[in-house]
Image (cartoon, rainbow, N blue to C red; front, side):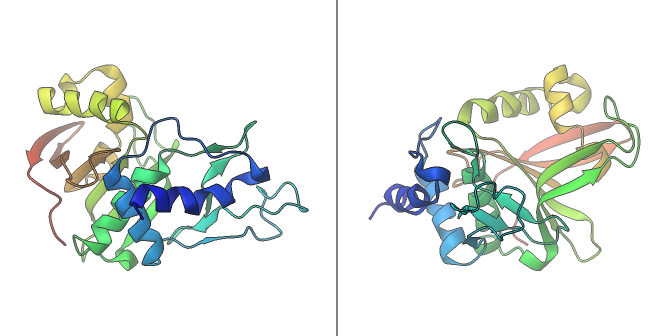
Length: 230
């Protein structure tokens, strides 16, 4: 069975209300492979919603697409959004896949990581202000608690390429287009050592990895060949 078929077979029964499964962008083999590895190795555990889950709006048809994320007070996430029809949250495919590959292939410790973490900015940045809330996709920490690897996940190759093209061509934050600056200026607050920008097709191989050097309210991005091993 192909990894894509495996993912389809897993997700189809989980769609809320029995709505049909559809993808806005066709899944790529690498994200299917590592999403499957995430589930089979228990990196994420998909389960039926608890009765008190606020997303469980139809008690007679309990949702089955909930999964828990590590080290978060509000740690429930859902693979689907309750539109009409229900829609798969497409960014979770590369997001979960890359998170799993960092752990299973590159040796990062799940106990020194976070997935989908809620934060607030600690200081005023270029456009963001202290106290403003935001969410990071995944963080992996070194022995001192600093972020060694930060993962920024995108839902489509188009979205990934738009950011990566600017990072590669400009190399420093102060030269990038405004839209890209707003997307990644959190590096000024978090100061990760490495940034992995990932989407469908760039989970394996990991083609968009950068060393980050923060200097005041600017940051320089240097391409590296692969995700550094833990």
